[in-house]
Image (tube, rainbow, N blue to C red):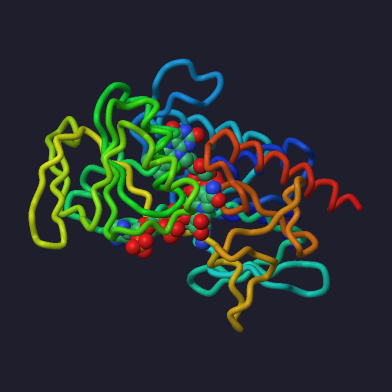
Length: 310
Ligand code: FAD
Ligand code: NAP
């Protein structure tokens, strides 16, 4: 029986492991289906992690984390968790891909989130090299330049406004002429001098070279094409939280989630299920930043230590 199972080895999971083992827990396993590091390893540049003064790649930022986080006894099992469910009495059952099962007294779920893809040509090829899903992270790299934003929800419009303060011009591309976003934010976007609404339009492809994106080809409902010569496009077509591990065989979730599937936690990262904690992008109101995910992981581990000591 594990004292603690951590699901996911991004910034939240790794930090949870560091704090749990350094805080005295002995039998702690982090299940990460790939190499530890999380989604930030896809980013070509990060410059907002405190203490790291230079712009580094996501890979460079995360490279020292596993060694530090495993120094106090955290074990990494490179396995995908398929489900977390109730075990005997007060424990949890962790089901692994391949059929194995492990029991744990407590669980911290840190499986993160995945930005939805819009599925235009070049989206994968240029992801992290001009195609971005994070304006807070990457907007500054386009200071004084023109960029495109794709999407018509609250995120797209809020991020278009954010970018309009940094960039010379923002083309807001949306596939319809009505926005899904709330009327208040739509009004603010319409009032912004340097946001051009490109409605009833889809992105056909992004193109570029080894250095990154050079332009975005869009097509409207009548089939007219337009070439936007921008070095960056921000895609905000919704986020998926990776909450599949909490789904039970009857379709319910092991703990309370909100209408978007985000795990509801309190300030100590406790979920509605005793002994089950959640940290990072998967939780409600997550700012979706590395520093915040790491902070959540530390908080969840400290809460777990108290829980197991009770
Ligand atoms: P994740 O990093 O998503 O990690 C979750 C981990 O869980 C993954 O490694 C995944 O493989 C694993 N996992 C998922 N399901 C399972 C399963 N069933 N079994 C086992 N393992 C599983 N933030 C910033 O602060 N600054 C930036 O500049 C910045 N730039 C970004 C650029 C890009 C391109 C992207 C995509 C994100 C960026 N972010 C940035 C956001 C940041 O990466 C996330 O907020 C942060 O990584 C969230 O950490 P997490 O640990 O909650 O989840
Ligand atoms: P969202 O509301 O699901 O909006 C996604 C947008 O992307 C929609 O406009 C959709 O177009 C468009 N889209 C989807 N797939 C596309 C594709 N393949 N190609 C082009 N466009 C595509 O997602 P979100 O904006 O991330 O918001 C998620 C939830 O969080 C929402 O409920 C939102 O209200 C909430 N949220 C709230 C706030 C806030 O309260 N301040 C801020 C952010 C998010 P259609 O409209 O045509 O479907």
